[in-house]
Amino acid sequence: GAVVSQHPSRVICKSGTSVKIECRSLDFQATTMFWYRQFPKQSLMLMATSNEGSKATYEQGVEKDKFLINHASLTLSTLTVTSAHPEDSSFYICSARNSQDADTQYFGPGTRLTVL
Amino acid sequence: KQEVTQIPAALSVPEGENLVLNCSFTDSAIYNLQWFRQDPGKGLTSLLLIQSSQREQTSGRLNASLDKSSGRSTLYIAASQPGDSATYLCAGRPSGNTPLVFGKGTRLSVIA
Image 1 (spheres, rainbow over the protein chains, first blue to last red):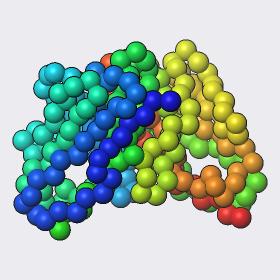
Image 2 (image 1 turned 135 degrees about the vertical axis):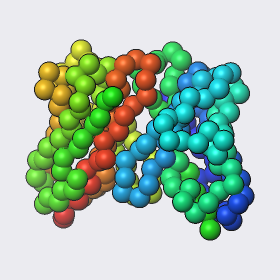
Image 3 (image 1 turned 45 degrees about the vertical axis):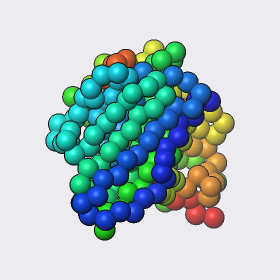
């Protein structure tokens, strides 16, 4: 099956620093990738949709200047949390849609961000 | 806007019992629906995907149904095992170009 990786799996940072999370589709091309965040015991909330080579589309209430998304290639999208604060601590999960099989979204293993 | 609701939020059953998890969605014009499993602190494992033209899908002890007219899907787990303990998430896709919309999940505990 299609594999999506995320790096790092876990990161702890100080308040005010920026953190970059990578999402890669390992064995397929993904023209579209999605970024979700999940608070403890809550569901996944869509943050943004990124299409390769164009600007990401952010969901209402998500600050695009705080959560920078880059989708520069068909296998890589990055999410940068800028000037992180403790309230940004969450589980971030990326998802990729196979260009050849748009019916299925494949999910990465998630990144646990803790901001001190 | 598509909204997905899962009931119950938590469920505890003895080992061996058959059980049903419920999912409802507000917009019957759903493109497809997917059930996932999530273990604590982990990512998502896809269990079953049902296209809008299908009524059910089966994989091993799992059976998922889809009733678009009533806006409901169920996940049936037969002969539950302690290893089935996890959170089960239901997610619907409103159309082919849109991402999955998730319910809040049902936290299942199967007691040995």
